[in-house]
Length: 171
Image: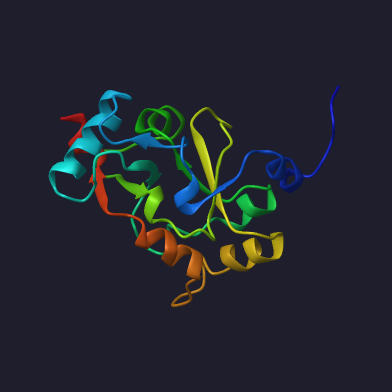
């Protein structure tokens, strides 16, 4: 049986966890996942940026507030800010260049007002959002406005303890 519904309603049917409560979604420091993910987490741990057992998801691009804001088109399609549960999933689904940055987002440091959904569309994809379509549109609308930022982008930036360049993982 096929049910037609809005993308936002479909997203609401998935298990949603908030901020630090989003256990079981990301990669865990100290547990083998894949070579790129494991190396990035180990480098972050050695630098003192992560503790053993920290749960991490990954965002491609810079740690700028604009990069940490969803596109309005994604919000209109029922999504939010894209992240990944492993670097391997990210690299299989996105074009990665040697200069690309990867942000490690510590879920335990993320505000409870940020919703974290492992939607697995495509496999390993994680969506970050906030409550309410109107609020999501307001957040996304700050992406192209100079000097205007949303609290949700700042909350995500505050939960990023470490970043790494793709080329560093490819060495």
